[in-house]
Length: 452
Image 1 (tube, one colour):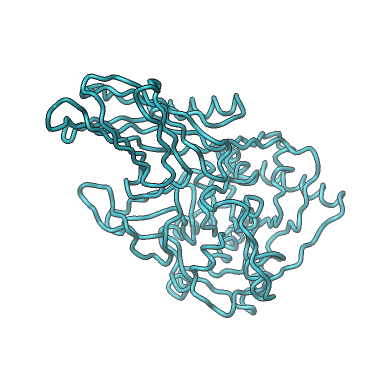
Image 2 (tube, rainbow, N blue to C red):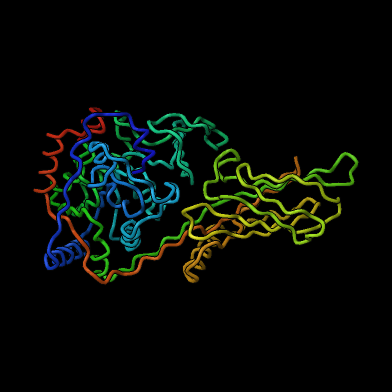
């Protein structure tokens, strides 16, 4: 799901069939299959979607076994594909957002994903309706209390190893672990339990963008057949065509990132001045990266008195001394990193040497919804708003959390037929299952296999 992830995996010789050939149907056949898919979705009572790397290739994330997949190119001795944008800035595809629309409409009951790119969660699929079988490159978990932390930066390790951060629960504090599996790691029992349960309940399992080669995950869709359900395999992103026929608009994607602005103040020894420090930090901790910020330009409305500054890298930190009674205002131009939908966002910070007592917090959900609505209406990003504030008396200071709209992607309704590689039922998946056994790519081992 990312070049960095592929490089972190342990090496194994047999990764299954690679360079899989693409098949294209004539237009009239394609349209007939899209219509069948739309009817199947509309008539389903318990729709489950099973996804693989193919749904993220349009997001700039290479797959593994396609014609230009990572392992295909490796086996051919060719250079690996170049990432078109930073992994942490990948945005959900039209297919991701179509699944969000189906979930909100009550049609889609559960998503099972083999991807580690975090795009299902980022798109808006509720965590309780998602099983991430192979983990999430942006997720850490606490092995003690089970808390999960979804980051805006890629976690540095894979293989369920300890990271550099701790659980933020004051009653816990255990060291966190990454959630991404290496080849020999067993599938997480909790995720598998939910996935198996919903596959047994499903009357339709829709497989999107997966070669169905990795066992035991590829066996999950088969469980719906035992209850009389149907398996539908779609290998290219054709959901938009079906959504058109269902007359269901695909929602826009709005990404909101967060930054803490920490302002601390202390009197000088002679009590004539205020020594103050301004710091921009991640909501995940002061040492955590802020990958969506490239630089920060700080200017002052009273330009004659105060010198502007440019902070080029983390820690984004400015220290100054001002007169004890001076009140002024700073303007922060936050220059956003590559992959963001706009160049910058501007935040004004008032400075008062007196200790602030106003720490009333707004309704975070309402503020975020208003930001999304404003971004969609204006078809632009860069808007920001306060979502939280904390006051500290020792040392004197305040921490204000800002939400910033850093991407907006609109998905127009498709007006033409979309390409389908194949839509079939159980016979096709059984053929792929036999192929997987003979070609032999098995990611997880005996402990998990026994549950199938």
